[in-house]
Amino acid sequence: MASSPNGRRRLLKLLRTTVYSIIVAFLCWQIWRVRYGLGDSLSSVGWSAVGLAAGFTVVGTFPGFFGWRLLVTGTGIRLTVSDAAWVFFLSGVTRYLPGAIWPPIVQAALARRVGAPAAGLMAAGLITLVLTALSGSIVGLLAVPHLAADDPIWWLSLPLVLSAAGAVMLAPRLFRRLLGLGQRILRRGDHEIALPTGKTSIGVIALNVLGWCCNGTHAAILAVALGAPPASAMTLGIGGFVLSAVAGALSQAPAGLGVREVVLGLTLGALVSGPDLVTLLLLSRLLTTLGHVIATLGVLGLLAGTRFVAARRRAAQTSPVRSLTRE
Image (spheres, rainbow, N blue to C red):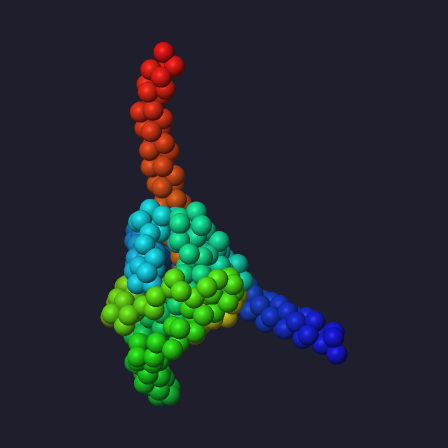
Protein backbone atom coordinates (compact mmCIF):
# COMPACT_ATOMS: atom_id res chain seq x y z
CA MET A 1 0.00 0.00 0.00
CA ALA A 2 2.85 2.40 0.74
CA SER A 3 4.14 2.10 -2.78
CA SER A 4 0.77 2.83 -4.45
CA PRO A 5 1.15 6.66 -4.42
CA ASN A 6 4.57 6.33 -6.03
CA GLY A 7 3.12 3.93 -8.55
CA ARG A 8 0.33 6.36 -9.43
CA ARG A 9 2.82 9.19 -9.83
CA ARG A 10 4.95 7.08 -12.14
CA LEU A 11 1.88 6.10 -14.15
CA LEU A 12 0.77 9.74 -14.50
CA LYS A 13 4.27 10.74 -15.52
CA LEU A 14 4.33 7.97 -18.11
CA LEU A 15 0.93 9.05 -19.45
CA ARG A 16 2.02 12.70 -19.71
CA THR A 17 5.22 11.72 -21.47
CA THR A 18 3.27 9.51 -23.87
CA VAL A 19 0.74 12.24 -24.66
CA TYR A 20 3.47 14.86 -25.20
CA SER A 21 5.39 12.44 -27.42
CA ILE A 22 2.32 11.76 -29.54
CA ILE A 23 1.65 15.49 -29.94
CA VAL A 24 5.25 16.27 -30.90
CA ALA A 25 5.32 13.32 -33.31
CA PHE A 26 2.07 14.55 -34.87
CA LEU A 27 3.49 18.04 -35.36
CA CYS A 28 6.71 16.68 -36.85
CA TRP A 29 4.68 14.53 -39.24
CA GLN A 30 2.66 17.59 -40.30
CA ILE A 31 5.87 19.48 -41.07
CA TRP A 32 7.31 16.53 -42.99
CA ARG A 33 4.09 16.09 -44.95
CA VAL A 34 4.17 19.63 -46.36
CA ARG A 35 7.94 20.11 -46.38
CA TYR A 36 8.07 20.93 -50.10
CA GLY A 37 5.63 23.81 -49.78
CA LEU A 38 7.02 25.40 -46.62
CA GLY A 39 9.58 27.50 -48.47
CA ASP A 40 6.96 29.10 -50.70
CA SER A 41 4.67 29.74 -47.74
CA LEU A 42 7.43 31.36 -45.71
CA SER A 43 8.42 33.62 -48.59
CA SER A 44 4.79 34.64 -49.15
CA VAL A 45 4.49 35.99 -45.61
CA GLY A 46 7.14 38.67 -46.09
CA TRP A 47 9.39 40.42 -43.62
CA SER A 48 7.01 43.35 -43.11
CA ALA A 49 4.21 41.07 -41.89
CA VAL A 50 6.63 39.14 -39.69
CA GLY A 51 7.97 42.37 -38.16
CA LEU A 52 4.48 43.74 -37.53
CA ALA A 53 3.33 40.47 -35.98
CA ALA A 54 6.43 40.36 -33.76
CA GLY A 55 5.71 43.91 -32.59
CA PHE A 56 2.24 42.93 -31.42
CA THR A 57 3.65 40.00 -29.42
CA VAL A 58 6.05 42.37 -27.65
CA VAL A 59 3.33 44.94 -26.89
CA GLY A 60 0.97 42.20 -25.73
CA THR A 61 3.25 41.39 -22.80
CA PHE A 62 2.73 44.68 -20.97
CA PRO A 63 -1.06 44.79 -20.29
CA GLY A 64 -0.62 41.55 -18.32
CA PHE A 65 2.04 43.23 -16.19
CA PHE A 66 -0.16 46.22 -15.40
CA GLY A 67 -3.07 43.89 -14.63
CA TRP A 68 -0.91 41.89 -12.21
CA ARG A 69 0.34 45.07 -10.53
CA LEU A 70 -3.23 46.35 -10.21
CA LEU A 71 -4.20 43.09 -8.51
CA VAL A 72 -1.18 43.19 -6.20
CA THR A 73 -2.10 46.73 -5.20
CA GLY A 74 -5.71 45.65 -4.71
CA THR A 75 -4.58 43.06 -2.16
CA GLY A 76 -2.90 45.77 -0.08
CA ILE A 77 0.71 45.34 -1.30
CA ARG A 78 2.50 48.48 -2.42
CA LEU A 79 5.32 48.03 -4.93
CA THR A 80 7.10 50.61 -7.03
CA VAL A 81 6.81 50.21 -10.78
CA SER A 82 10.44 49.11 -11.03
CA ASP A 83 10.15 46.52 -8.25
CA ALA A 84 6.89 45.19 -9.68
CA ALA A 85 8.38 44.95 -13.17
CA TRP A 86 11.45 43.14 -11.84
CA VAL A 87 9.33 40.55 -9.99
CA PHE A 88 6.81 40.06 -12.80
CA PHE A 89 9.19 39.72 -15.74
CA LEU A 90 11.78 37.67 -13.89
CA SER A 91 9.11 35.21 -12.70
CA GLY A 92 7.68 35.10 -16.22
CA VAL A 93 10.74 33.20 -17.40
CA THR A 94 9.36 30.13 -15.61
CA ARG A 95 6.49 29.85 -18.12
CA TYR A 96 8.81 27.54 -20.08
CA LEU A 97 8.74 25.02 -17.23
CA PRO A 98 6.00 22.37 -17.02
CA GLY A 99 2.98 23.70 -15.13
CA ALA A 100 1.48 27.17 -14.74
CA ILE A 101 2.11 27.40 -10.99
CA TRP A 102 5.77 28.47 -11.22
CA PRO A 103 5.35 32.26 -11.66
CA PRO A 104 3.45 32.65 -8.35
CA ILE A 105 6.05 30.51 -6.59
CA VAL A 106 8.94 32.58 -7.93
CA GLN A 107 7.10 35.81 -7.12
CA ALA A 108 6.78 34.63 -3.51
CA ALA A 109 10.49 33.76 -3.47
CA LEU A 110 11.36 37.28 -4.66
CA ALA A 111 8.99 38.99 -2.21
CA ARG A 112 11.58 39.62 0.52
CA ARG A 113 13.86 41.51 -1.85
CA VAL A 114 11.15 44.06 -2.59
CA GLY A 115 9.79 44.23 0.97
CA ALA A 116 6.50 42.47 0.22
CA PRO A 117 4.77 39.59 2.04
CA ALA A 118 5.52 36.32 0.29
CA ALA A 119 2.05 34.90 0.96
CA GLY A 120 0.50 38.02 -0.55
CA LEU A 121 2.43 37.76 -3.80
CA MET A 122 1.75 34.03 -3.97
CA ALA A 123 -1.99 34.58 -3.55
CA ALA A 124 -2.01 37.45 -6.05
CA GLY A 125 -0.22 35.23 -8.55
CA LEU A 126 -2.77 32.44 -8.11
CA ILE A 127 -5.67 34.87 -8.60
CA THR A 128 -3.92 36.24 -11.68
CA LEU A 129 -3.83 32.76 -13.20
CA VAL A 130 -7.60 32.45 -12.79
CA LEU A 131 -8.37 35.90 -14.19
CA THR A 132 -5.94 35.47 -17.08
CA ALA A 133 -7.56 32.19 -18.13
CA LEU A 134 -11.01 33.75 -17.76
CA SER A 135 -10.12 36.80 -19.85
CA GLY A 136 -8.61 34.51 -22.49
CA SER A 137 -11.84 32.54 -22.65
CA ILE A 138 -13.74 35.79 -23.16
CA VAL A 139 -11.51 36.81 -26.07
CA GLY A 140 -11.77 33.29 -27.46
CA LEU A 141 -15.49 33.92 -28.02
CA LEU A 142 -14.47 35.90 -31.11
CA ALA A 143 -13.86 32.58 -32.84
CA VAL A 144 -17.24 31.08 -31.89
CA PRO A 145 -19.30 32.36 -34.88
CA HIS A 146 -16.89 30.77 -37.39
CA LEU A 147 -16.54 27.56 -35.41
CA ALA A 148 -20.30 27.34 -34.83
CA ALA A 149 -20.91 27.55 -38.57
CA ASP A 150 -19.50 24.01 -38.83
CA ASP A 151 -20.71 22.76 -35.45
CA PRO A 152 -23.50 24.68 -33.62
CA ILE A 153 -22.47 23.14 -30.30
CA TRP A 154 -19.84 25.90 -30.07
CA TRP A 155 -22.65 28.33 -29.19
CA LEU A 156 -22.83 26.62 -25.79
CA SER A 157 -19.46 28.17 -24.93
CA LEU A 158 -21.07 31.62 -24.83
CA PRO A 159 -23.27 31.08 -21.73
CA LEU A 160 -20.56 28.94 -20.12
CA VAL A 161 -17.90 31.64 -20.35
CA LEU A 162 -20.27 34.42 -19.29
CA SER A 163 -21.45 32.34 -16.32
CA ALA A 164 -17.85 31.69 -15.30
CA ALA A 165 -17.08 35.41 -15.52
CA GLY A 166 -20.07 36.26 -13.35
CA ALA A 167 -19.16 33.57 -10.83
CA VAL A 168 -15.61 34.87 -10.46
CA MET A 169 -16.78 38.45 -10.10
CA LEU A 170 -19.68 37.80 -7.73
CA ALA A 171 -18.25 34.97 -5.63
CA PRO A 172 -15.35 36.23 -3.50
CA ARG A 173 -15.25 32.80 -1.87
CA LEU A 174 -12.99 31.62 -4.71
CA PHE A 175 -10.51 34.42 -4.03
CA ARG A 176 -10.53 33.69 -0.32
CA ARG A 177 -9.65 30.08 -1.05
CA LEU A 178 -6.79 31.15 -3.29
CA LEU A 179 -5.55 33.53 -0.62
CA GLY A 180 -5.74 30.72 1.93
CA LEU A 181 -3.92 28.37 -0.44
CA GLY A 182 -1.04 30.80 -0.84
CA GLN A 183 -0.79 31.20 2.93
CA ARG A 184 -0.89 27.45 3.55
CA ILE A 185 1.80 26.78 0.97
CA LEU A 186 4.10 29.32 2.58
CA ARG A 187 2.87 28.69 6.15
CA ARG A 188 2.31 32.38 6.79
CA GLY A 189 -0.41 34.16 8.75
CA ASP A 190 -3.63 35.37 7.22
CA HIS A 191 -3.76 38.88 8.62
CA GLU A 192 -1.79 40.88 6.04
CA ILE A 193 -3.68 40.03 2.81
CA ALA A 194 -6.76 41.94 1.67
CA LEU A 195 -9.36 40.61 -0.75
CA PRO A 196 -9.41 42.36 -4.17
CA THR A 197 -12.63 44.22 -4.90
CA GLY A 198 -14.90 43.51 -7.85
CA LYS A 199 -13.73 46.75 -9.45
CA THR A 200 -10.13 45.59 -9.22
CA SER A 201 -11.01 42.21 -10.74
CA ILE A 202 -12.83 43.86 -13.63
CA GLY A 203 -9.82 46.11 -14.24
CA VAL A 204 -7.47 43.12 -14.25
CA ILE A 205 -9.71 41.24 -16.69
CA ALA A 206 -9.94 44.29 -18.97
CA LEU A 207 -6.15 44.67 -19.09
CA ASN A 208 -5.70 40.97 -19.77
CA VAL A 209 -8.29 41.10 -22.54
CA LEU A 210 -6.25 43.89 -24.13
CA GLY A 211 -3.09 41.83 -23.81
CA TRP A 212 -4.74 38.74 -25.30
CA CYS A 213 -6.04 40.78 -28.25
CA CYS A 214 -2.57 42.20 -28.92
CA ASN A 215 -1.01 38.76 -28.77
CA GLY A 216 -3.71 37.20 -30.95
CA THR A 217 -3.36 39.92 -33.59
CA HIS A 218 -0.06 38.41 -34.66
CA ALA A 219 -1.90 35.27 -35.81
CA ALA A 220 -4.40 37.37 -37.75
CA ILE A 221 -1.57 39.26 -39.48
CA LEU A 222 0.12 36.02 -40.50
CA ALA A 223 -3.18 34.57 -41.74
CA VAL A 224 -3.87 37.64 -43.89
CA ALA A 225 -0.34 37.48 -45.31
CA LEU A 226 -1.04 33.85 -46.27
CA GLY A 227 -4.22 34.79 -48.14
CA ALA A 228 -6.99 34.63 -45.53
CA PRO A 229 -9.84 37.20 -45.70
CA PRO A 230 -8.98 40.11 -43.34
CA ALA A 231 -12.35 40.20 -41.58
CA SER A 232 -12.35 36.48 -40.83
CA ALA A 233 -8.68 36.55 -39.89
CA MET A 234 -9.19 39.25 -37.27
CA THR A 235 -11.94 37.36 -35.44
CA LEU A 236 -10.97 33.73 -35.95
CA GLY A 237 -7.24 34.48 -35.87
CA ILE A 238 -7.35 36.35 -32.57
CA GLY A 239 -9.98 34.14 -30.96
CA GLY A 240 -8.42 30.92 -32.21
CA PHE A 241 -4.96 31.83 -30.98
CA VAL A 242 -6.21 32.83 -27.53
CA LEU A 243 -8.20 29.60 -27.21
CA SER A 244 -5.07 27.65 -28.12
CA ALA A 245 -2.96 29.61 -25.62
CA VAL A 246 -5.45 28.99 -22.80
CA ALA A 247 -5.62 25.30 -23.70
CA GLY A 248 -1.83 25.14 -23.69
CA ALA A 249 -1.65 26.76 -20.26
CA LEU A 250 -4.21 24.35 -18.84
CA SER A 251 -2.36 21.38 -20.31
CA GLN A 252 0.63 21.98 -17.97
CA ALA A 253 3.00 21.43 -20.91
CA PRO A 254 6.02 23.80 -20.99
CA ALA A 255 4.64 27.02 -22.57
CA GLY A 256 1.78 24.88 -23.91
CA LEU A 257 4.18 23.29 -26.40
CA GLY A 258 2.36 20.98 -28.79
CA VAL A 259 -1.09 21.41 -27.26
CA ARG A 260 -1.27 25.02 -28.39
CA GLU A 261 -0.25 24.13 -31.93
CA VAL A 262 -2.87 21.37 -32.18
CA VAL A 263 -5.71 23.63 -31.00
CA LEU A 264 -4.51 26.52 -33.17
CA GLY A 265 -4.38 24.22 -36.18
CA LEU A 266 -7.93 23.02 -35.54
CA THR A 267 -9.31 26.55 -35.24
CA LEU A 268 -7.34 28.31 -37.99
CA GLY A 269 -7.73 25.40 -40.37
CA ALA A 270 -10.87 27.17 -41.62
CA LEU A 271 -8.70 30.06 -42.89
CA VAL A 272 -5.54 28.42 -44.23
CA SER A 273 -4.49 24.85 -44.88
CA GLY A 274 -1.61 22.68 -46.01
CA PRO A 275 1.85 24.29 -46.00
CA ASP A 276 0.34 27.70 -45.17
CA LEU A 277 -1.20 26.37 -41.95
CA VAL A 278 2.04 24.70 -40.85
CA THR A 279 3.94 27.90 -41.65
CA LEU A 280 1.50 29.89 -39.52
CA LEU A 281 1.91 27.48 -36.61
CA LEU A 282 5.70 27.58 -36.79
CA LEU A 283 5.89 31.36 -37.08
CA SER A 284 3.33 31.82 -34.29
CA ARG A 285 5.43 29.78 -31.88
CA LEU A 286 8.63 31.53 -32.95
CA LEU A 287 7.22 35.06 -32.76
CA THR A 288 5.42 34.65 -29.43
CA THR A 289 8.57 33.24 -27.86
CA LEU A 290 10.70 35.96 -29.43
CA GLY A 291 8.29 38.68 -28.31
CA HIS A 292 8.33 37.46 -24.72
CA VAL A 293 12.13 37.20 -24.71
CA ILE A 294 12.54 40.70 -26.18
CA ALA A 295 10.11 42.22 -23.66
CA THR A 296 11.69 40.39 -20.72
CA LEU A 297 15.29 41.19 -21.64
CA GLY A 298 14.36 44.77 -22.49
CA VAL A 299 12.65 45.43 -19.15
CA LEU A 300 15.22 43.62 -17.02
CA GLY A 301 18.08 45.27 -18.93
CA LEU A 302 16.53 48.70 -18.47
CA LEU A 303 16.05 48.09 -14.75
CA ALA A 304 19.61 46.86 -14.35
CA GLY A 305 20.93 49.88 -16.24
CA THR A 306 18.97 52.42 -14.21
CA ARG A 307 20.02 50.79 -10.93
CA PHE A 308 23.64 50.78 -12.03
CA VAL A 309 23.49 54.47 -12.94
CA ALA A 310 21.76 55.29 -9.64
CA ALA A 311 24.43 53.37 -7.71
CA ARG A 312 27.21 55.26 -9.53
CA ARG A 313 25.56 58.57 -8.74
CA ARG A 314 25.24 57.71 -5.06
CA ALA A 315 28.89 56.66 -4.99
CA ALA A 316 29.94 59.91 -6.66
CA GLN A 317 27.93 61.97 -4.20
CA THR A 318 29.34 60.25 -1.13
CA SER A 319 33.01 60.11 -2.22
CA PRO A 320 33.76 63.86 -1.63
CA VAL A 321 32.19 63.58 1.83
CA ARG A 322 34.43 60.64 2.65
CA SER A 323 37.55 62.51 1.49
CA LEU A 324 36.70 65.57 3.57
CA THR A 325 36.10 63.39 6.61
CA ARG A 326 39.52 61.80 6.25
CA GLU A 327 41.19 65.21 6.03
